[in-house]
Length: 599
Image (tube, rainbow, N blue to C red; front, side, top):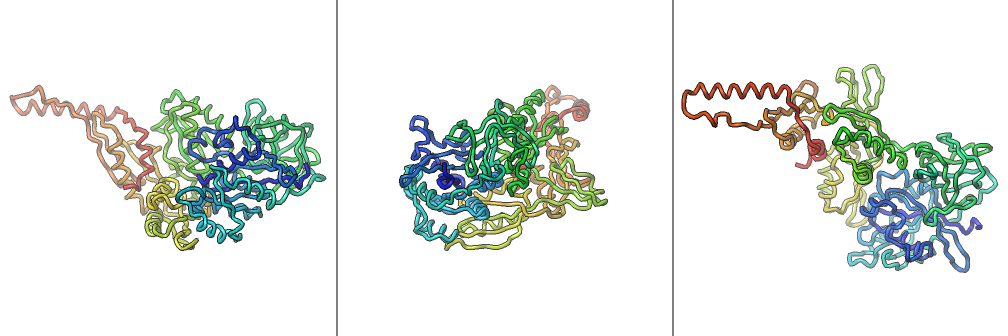
């Protein structure tokens, strides 16, 4: 097909603003999928995506549509909506020439929407604004249209008003895509350059790369290579998404499709990499490639030690489909053998945890999440640690640096005070405040990532009755007065409960943690002391009372020395038991680290 009749676009929206529903209606309208095969959230293949209403993995689909007597080829690239997957979104945007911006008519612009709009503007995409859910009782299409017009500088009359659920106005969206989105450049006479915007693993065909061709063409006979990883391969299959994978002979510049590489791990075919010919290929890769960097780390342990190998196999299989997931073996005094796992963010961690339990049927214990710290030693050497247990002795440490984020919060002005109070308690530094309109503001803060990942999002939603939305991006590493706080149970340090905290907050957090653990650790036949300590200094202590057997029950009457003798005998037994007794620490104890600030 003539490249002038090809359109590549994506849909950007906040979670639950109707992105997947609009994609469904487009598939129906273009007869890409028959009514018999139609189902809600068709492009969201995972059960988790359907249940949560969130797109986790990008997907693509090719649609044919007749407009003004000519047939057009329209490629829709569906992008994830969550802040954890911003890098994947940026790659999907680079594969397009236009973006449909979907905004909920009752909720207006949210933080993640704006972030994705800025990403689209950076890629110089044509943005088509759409107000969705206009048939809801709480819809305010005129107010929201004014908000969007002010944001991206388009006339209000150009903003489309639709209801994706009932199909109102969906045809107008397709017409706007054809009229406003420019066709791809015609670059057939130059060496192949195809960008990988997503990939998944297939047990028969190896890694299947989702690609957008910018230059040249590709067929089954070409020998190809990936420019960042230098992996070489011959394509097993080339095809398009229709919406299921459909094999074709070749792909041309401007088209979107897939290449089955036969490679055995997703690590060899990363999102953002450039595919070219092995011989006589392009010398310069497409811009923007960046290996995904985990930001949040947690320990994952099987509840039964016998399940260790099963957990290892499950993580290996998950990693085949998720290149951002990294893990390495770790052992803990309290939890035995497990893995230290790196995630893109808290939502990514939640998804992995749920998939391990649901798809692989493994009972796991997940420790509280932590971030990657930089430790500068007195000899000027720098080490990176992602677990408090790895922190070297205080005597050799010059400074500890932690990641700080740029945070944007969108909120109605009624909740500014509560949000500022919450953020300042979490060591946030106030930046600026902008008014979007008469009632909505954007608050800019700088804040440590370690404070965001614990319970900040939940508490922000509570403080704003669910109206505020949050977005954050990495800013820099900053040296702070940080210390390692150990938890000792029965005199033994529990490495899995250790925390790296700010020195000013150590006493307060230690007290709260010990109070919670006192209620969570089950009572034994002997007294269990629980302590929070920084170095040799004990910050807080509580005792879990012993279960007592009434040894005096059979002793009535007679001299008091008989009672004393029985109590002394019991005391010796408890002392001996305490020396050899083991204390079981339940999963709730590790989870208590996530809610230290809730009281």
